[in-house]
Length: 599
Ligand SMILES: NC(=O)C1=CN([C@@H]2O[C@H](COP(=O)(O)OP(=O)(O)OC[C@H]3O[C@@H](n4cnc5c(N)ncnc54)[C@H](OP(=O)(O)O)[C@@H]3O)[C@@H](O)[C@H]2O)C=CC1
Ligand SMILES: O=C1O[C@H](COP(=O)(O)O)[C@@H](O)[C@H](O)[C@H]1O
Image (tube, rainbow, N blue to C red; front, side, top):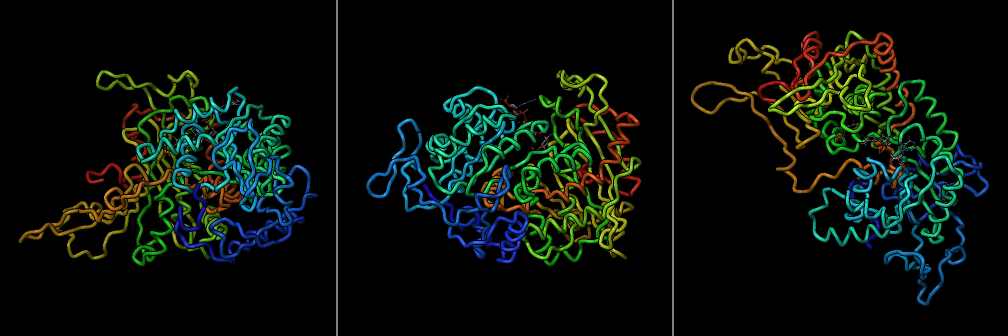
């Protein structure tokens, strides 16, 4: 089994030492019990600093610890339940079914990493989390001594979990060489424990099993809360009190929704912080793990040609577009309580906007980037009802097929007014973006599936070629399109002379089409984010003050929509969405870029 090397999975340079050291020291001071130590086995991104925090065994009861590594760890052979053999290897009790890694070398002091997927029987776990873990394993990106535990109420044996996981492991790795062998090896590292989410006793049983697998090593534990939000707190409480690591770090990935509004989000954060420090909470927004979203900063800050144009001086408007060509199928129950604004705009699109519009961070360190994101979010105007259009899809018959209405879903009330579509104009009141409309559009059951950022530039002043464009000068402005998905691409629409003796201009694309340019597959967002959480890299996770700022923008609007019972504009399933979105854009002299003839 390959170990996690600093260059294998990722080849970016480690963070500057100051960034790691500063984040470590802040968590040290907060807990009070921690001391700083140097250790040899460190996450890759902190190689330069090698500074960790250690929490003594007498730390505040029930609180999980992060950044902790045992300083004077009891020698492994004293703690391990495994029997010592010659050559320094340990054998495993026969009841333990494990792969080659069971033969622990006592000289190998690499920590164990236990990943517990809470809600392992659910949709997200099957669809995204297990496949992402497998892909990381396939790429040799998981730590040497890792174990995956599924935890949920459903009764399942280890074998049944493995069967479930193998059936749903439909990931990008599928067609690769040795996939089935690798899968077999991976599945041997997967186990299951059935328990209630509010039972300390059940989590204590899990803890016991984790300890067996960890074999007396320093244990680092990652809990992924892949469960409905109403059971987040119970699970965190029980995991914290009964199954947090005694000598390593403990981190918790929390899935959205992080509340429904400012109040409920603050209450959730407060409740989580009874058991966790902020730096142990990894609030996931999987859009931040998408390749082209990750690339936004590279595009802006490492190319001279973009950053100087990145302001009101040259940019007319920015469009953030999300559309899906299917409805809420199967998730209507969840969706009806949230709607498209909370499901997509307040998180995914707003996060992209923040990365797009933030000022240059001091460094690439997670806290520096998150500081800039918070600043730009706090410079934004809360959304106004008159700047928003909401819609809901209705049934539509096409080619003899009937596509259902949103309210045809049995888990959705017949009279639901929940928006499945929304368009909004947002504004950032700072020097860089004053007056520039940021238009967002998100919808389900539309004509296409896409997520993209469109940047429309201003007209060329005194353009010598104006007459070649006819009257529609707007058609002649440059547009930069960052196509997040599908078929990732970055292209810039330019005016170009059509070859020939005459002088005819057309619109052509300078096109960076990922599939054509890069032979390497694009990893799934969950792979990147899981690896980040294991490595303690928080850059792509949402900090609580960011979350507060995000909710502050949307909460007044959401309340008004609900209190006034605003009726959505109905649009046919599979259409381009409500026409109201065009009127909204037109009010700001904008045309949606995704509807042009040459999108
Ligand atoms: N599915 C998706 O595509 C996405 C999901 N999310 C978020 O991820 C989290 C998990 O989503 P998903 O997997 O779809 O959720 P599920 O509804 O599939 O729930 C996950 C598991 O939680 C348990 N569970 C479900 N409902 C309850 C309940 N009322 N009380 C106690 N346990 C319950 C079930 O396990 P058991 O009965 O075995 O205990 C279930 O298998 C949610 O917060 C969701 O909002 C975020 C983005 C996308
Ligand atoms: O968070 C969510 O995202 C998905 C879309 O994710 P994608 O990676 O497939 O684009 C969306 O379908 C879902 O409603 C929402 O909760």
